[in-house]
Length: 326
Ligand SMILES: Cc1ncc(C[n+]2csc(CCOP(=O)(O)OP(=O)(O)O)c2C)c(N)n1
Image (cartoon, rainbow, N blue to C red):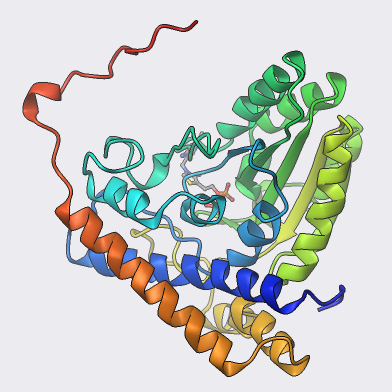
């Protein structure tokens, strides 16, 4: 923990956000095993400090574009746990009426402009959102989350180039968790320092320890200040996912020792221990946060269970938009 200490309320909030992501996803695994949730599901466990540190620095008018590993970003952004859980159940009360599932959370109200199943697919969308904001004189930035695997896609390079050329307020957040599914970064990139790739496009950049929520917050604060001035920024967060890539992954590409080594820097424990040592948070705070989160997660399951299935007559509804653009 290198940066200035937060006050009690702010520290509690950061802890709460990270614990929410962790416990919500643990419940998702349980519901997946019970076959209540089906299809693809990618967990964010281990990476909580990134979404928390960055999104807590955004304003309500800012937009977010994410990947298929987006439960954490959606929760921190303020989407209700119930609407996310119901979405994964495939119920109408879900944020996308149960038609998107885990990889396609969406919420116009909070400008959470989607999880995206296509690696790199969110990057051009972020460019479009930021361009629209700029052309319509809205003072908003777009935060675009993507994994290091997306850096090998053409969309990454095209998006960085256009963002710099058009001076777009995009915060590019690369969540570098070392493995794109089963392929280690060193096998896919000739230059593994991802932040430095910004230099090739005149995009300001920085690297941050993605397990340290305060370091991420501080880096995000500075990076967002640049984007508010109308310049893009590439922030590489070095992080690690503790679970498998998705629900189907034998994890043959990494050793148990490596995972255990990273778990010693669990972002939640790391943060809480430092806050306790500094007398900012206490064990009682931790217990209260856990109790609040447990209730929120249980309520989200009850909400999803009580939800309704789409009637079969609605099968072809929403193939075409029902809204006419004004
Ligand atoms: C264009 C495209 N190619 C391949 C895939 C299959 N795929 C799904 S996830 C993934 C790995 C991506 O890794 P990374 O971007 O590092 O994100 P992480 O899963 O590590 O968060 C791949 C190759 C895909 N969804 N889209």
